[in-house]
Amino acid sequence: MKTKGRFVAYYRVSTRKQGASGLGLEAQRTAVANYLGDCTARVVAEFTEVESGTRSDRPALDQALTAARVHQAALVVAKVDRLTRSVGFLSRLLEAGVDVRFADLPAIEGPTGRFMLQQMAAVAELEAGLISSRTKAALLAAKARGQRLGGNRGIHLSATAKARGRQAQAMQAQRRANDLAQVIQEVRARGACSATEIARALTARGIPTARGGSTWSASQVTRIQARLLSGTSTHA
Image (tube, helix red, strand yellow):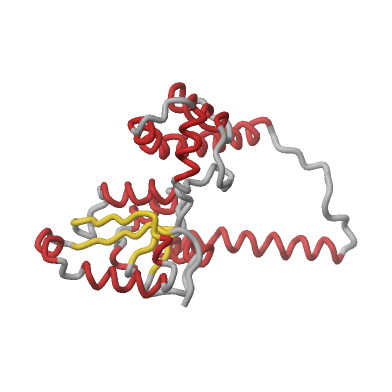
């Protein structure tokens, strides 16, 4: 089995005794290693939580999600029940914008994995898929009637819709900057002072840019720093 991409591994044990002894933890590590196969070297970070599955305040998981966004990696856990049994928490996880993989369900990944989480969170999430199906059926029916598809058909976004779109982009860019704040602080502590030096350090660490590039520029770092200082955001 060969699983591609970058990964952040997240392990959880329910009691401090299990965390100290390794009971349950070793089995989770083995399950994740088997799932990743010969791509275990692509694990960019690991986090272990000692906490009850019914609680939603999990600092280690928050750190794992941040690391996954920084490295544009997938979060991998050994079993579905190692993640959560809380509907509210699953909804929060969906909003984190991170691809989640389960070692015990290797076929579930990407859009399918997200759909599974949505099912666990609420059956109502199916409505999004139903709307998509109805839209496709309506387009096919319109095409059968000879209606022209594609191009500008007189549909224009309202000013409110455009403003919401810009706001969503701004929030996403600001979250990316916040995720990178600690990394930038670390490279500064190691002597990288200028934007060019920080860009080289981020590139050397293999952290992708917002658009998935492998090489950072000084201007991208400058924009990230500006967001951290002022809260304004444009795409890096």
